[in-house]
Image (cartoon, rainbow, N blue to C red):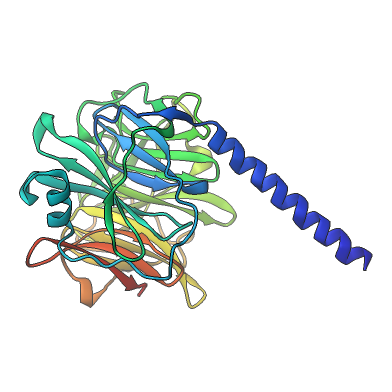
Length: 355
């Protein structure tokens, strides 16, 4: 009885500590209207906080969506999402670009970052799709938010290519103004300031040499032997791992290339999931569609450090039902993912079973 009582008290204390920690995160945000100049990469953190990469402003925003509970058990499915959004914001579908997709794990609602218009006059829009597949604009006026500015940005859209919240930090990939431009940085949240991050280089097997100026296109965090790693994918398509402990400010870090997945391809998005007791990477690509890559042996596979022709390292399986036209994805729950698909007429949002 004593043990059970102590356990109950410990659970209550842990819940109270967790509540205080989450309250601290929300309390770090201030009411106002964020001065978003663009909306690119998206990621969710605790308590429905949405992180938005703003490459035009070279900064990251944290927005309180207030979206902290599931409303129903539906799974999002919207045909012609580009046309629906275009109609909502008053432009034609070809004057609209969907930049990223993220699922709020607290609610199952899907958020999209969108550019309304083209060129320097494009305006950022955030879209919400609920579990009943209702599409609405997420109005940022008067929301609670925080902002952190990147100190050494390169010029152009590739200053921020991907973001992810991992264990109290927002990881940001992109290009910096440093000599070795490819950059990975970790920004503690709540925000104070961002440092200049670490310069990262890779050996690109298909190109037969080291690269320091190619940005990470997409990445995901993954624990290997108890240590957090960033698994990063690059154009043409090396898959590289970087131990987080090596990403020290101002350092030049060489990643370990664990796979070459094929030339002439641009990775677009990736997630990691578990099925049948094993972990997998699911990656959508411009040329190869959806690829499923087992992580088993990722710590033992021989590093690729010489020129290779074709594929090498970890093996990838093409998901036949989605060989082309998958543009974005995120996990919906333990068994499903949400994808953005290019269809015969426009674009669709679909929920699919994890393969």
